[in-house]
Amino acid sequence: MLYRKRPLRPREKARCVRCRSVLYRGTSADLNRVVALTLGAAFIFLIAQFFPIVELDVNGLTSSATLLGAIRVLWHEQMHVVATMVFLFTMLFPAIELGSLLYVSLGLRLGVKVPGFSLVLRAVQTARAWGMTEVLMIGILITVIKMTSLATVVPRPGLFAFGALTMMLAIVVSFDPKALWNAGDDLARQALPGIRYKSFEPGDALLPCHSCGLVAPPGGTARHPHCVRCGATLHGRHPDSINRTWALLIAAAILYIPANLLPVMYTHSLFGVEDDTIMSGVVFFWTSGSKGLAIIIFIASVVVPMLKLATLALLAFTAQRRSRWRPEQRTKLYRMVEFIGRWSMLDIFVVTLTVALVRFDALAVITAGPGALAFGAVVVLTMLASMQFDPRLIWDPVDDAAKPHQPAVKNLAIGEHHV
Image (cartoon, rainbow, N blue to C red; front, side):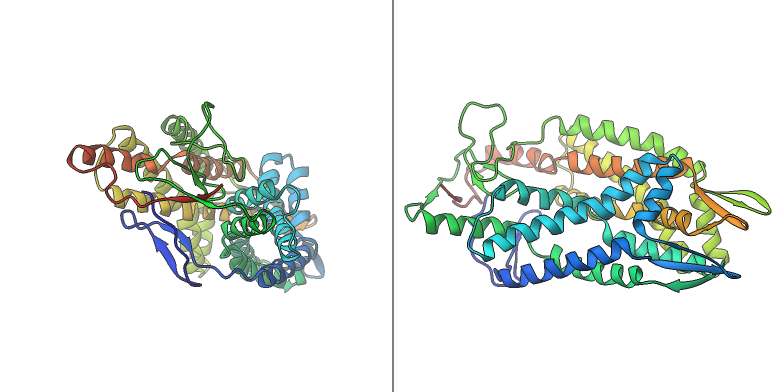
């Protein structure tokens, strides 16, 4: 649906009257606050990455781990794909988000639209979708509790830094990057006072940009036009959305079987080699008295992937059949899948830290197993599937059925954009 955008007070939300999706939020344009929070988070981020997280002490033998060290251990054990995923989700993407946001907001604070403004802001939104610092923090806590039964656990500066970083990123993420697009437009209008708003009539062919939020006519003869503000490719609907979703879902479903059957860790000790699967980890926490953690791991590593596969399959099937069955409820299911998708990486982060910490050559060494690779692939494939699915396909049959019975412009407001 198309709406006229109007200003909101801070903490107010504008929702679609049909699917109840949040269209945009009222945010404060206080660039000083954005710069201060982002700069503080960047400093904490550096401390968290390069200082030890915890230290284990077993009868005088000690072992500690940093996040970078844990990734290096996985890489040396030939788990290159898992190491790359952990590096991207916990180091690179959060660094891109913080660095890009700081670069743009500092420029706006100084009254300058920095070079590469559009590209950098698009990088912020892409990195935000894949950054998983909050999931890593839960994984660290689970690992610490698990290690208390094996050794004396000594907290190190990295642990407190990750806790602080998680809280600061929660505040940073609450800031909508689209407000920075508007601030950039304000600078442009000051430089070129002749710029005015252009209005469109209801029924005009318009395409929304999902990067910067601009609504504009397609223009030109290109098959896939580009946004005039940020340069992103515009699509009326995602190309081949259903086929791509099915392909990714089938691949994820196939890998889900070895992810649960193959070991995610091998424990080499004086008593031999012990295999640990996802379910054996759940059983370990349950029998050791940590039933709450067992439930968390079971939900994040077993229930959530199954629900994602089943829900996305339902959405793809009903959209392919052009079903008009409960469109609002299906839209809510899609938003739920988007929200919980990253939390399945919890088990991978626990494996990563455990492998890095248990490095007592004389007593025990833990290495990653093939199940970790399969499970990480399932998480990434289901996240990609949810990104490829276009939720607008849910509402297309509803609109088509309503057209013969009501005017085409009903419930449509006039849109505006900057020229």
